[in-house]
Length: 309
Length: 328
Image 1: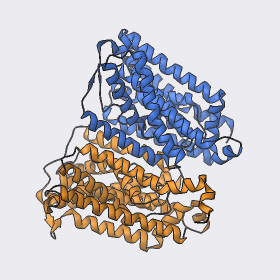
Image 2: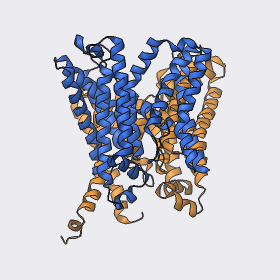
Image 3: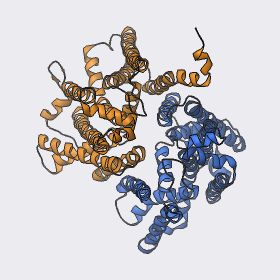
């Protein structure tokens, strides 16, 4: 396992994405219309924030499948607050606070009680989702006029969201590479016992990663909320799988301790482009989910193949 | 692993669960007359067969320390394939069912090759096939096509009575008995637990770990296909979204039934009790005029409580070891 090969895997999603974009440029130049493309990117901006969190959780050798439900709870909470007339400047931190709380509950159960994260987050996913359905009965939340696109024009709002998501990504990339806490996540993910022996508190790091995941879900919820005039209480259904898939396709290894957040961006864009690409290449759009599944399997096989070498 | 302390604790888990199930039954019975009626009991049985079958399929998988997120999607894919074979390929129902079972086995085989032969993590492999199988079902039906108008002889399987119970119940009991015998009364079943408890140890002990792992995933595929056929017979239609979310309910039933999510320990009768607990809770709350969502929420909370109840004493003992050693 040489350094060269690791780099190849880090970049493979980006390479495949590049090939797809070139193919589109040759066979379906209509894909490159600015407005649909901008809408696509703005739509994926919240997913990028969530996928970064999911990547950090996976790097820490855990998994969080409750993010979709956290996202929905934060969306509805933020929507109700905004409907009460609270300015967005207050809604954003409050939504993040709700997400942080939900993440902390996962964190306590996983790190404090040492329960397996897959089952804990499965349980919280169902509990939050059903609880929300019970409270809201499928009702949409109507948002006040100034909320959509942050009160800006649509194009400016979309650019703001994209830039915000990229800044978030940059911040997390910097933090994972330069902050001690960021390095600790990798340390705990590759070998929790070795990390503990070198003075890191693995349970504390695990707890914080889940809290961060919740906070990012809360932030993403607001980024999604400002894109439409209403809040769908079913928001975020399937988001957890999308986020995990983006991380894995982007080269984050499910066995923990390895992966770059840059890869997550490429992985997410690759998965997001499949649907529009199928439409523009005049193929049946129904194949989208099957192709996404195939890409995830290919990414896992690539990881496994590298380990065998 | 064979220490009596752990054994009695396991025994206690299933006993407690049995008490919970019985209590649930009596509570809902006391709340209204409609719950305990024979009609409703049959209705409850019909509805729980699908999830029950997937939970049975999931038990050996989780016993080996794996997981299979793709069973719900596979149920959808098999339902669509079954409809295709019958309506579009013109096969008679029994032949269509047989070919569907082969397809289920092949889909399970795909999981098996990736997990058992190439040693890839089960969680992410089955996450991929979760998306792949559902996507294929959608692609085959273009997202809208529905298969209906099945012959009455086939719908009998899902909607009529046989031997004094819903027609699908004997099939379910037969498969449950089969899985129970496999897990608890054969060396194969014992090897599942050995692999889940210590995969490397199992290899050194001479167990063919890859082949045994492949077996549990192929078995899960076949059972998911059977579940798909029974599901189609109950609803009288096959659609691409059949069984959405069933994988999570199946995992909940298995974990609630006392099977360790890390593998190595668990029982099939625990899984059956877990399925019953979830099914009665869902059905009973609907009869008590509570919204269905409350049942879902309570299922989630029940799962957390079951896990925390099993783990809290251990964590406390680790944190304050002296207290445990102190003389009483």
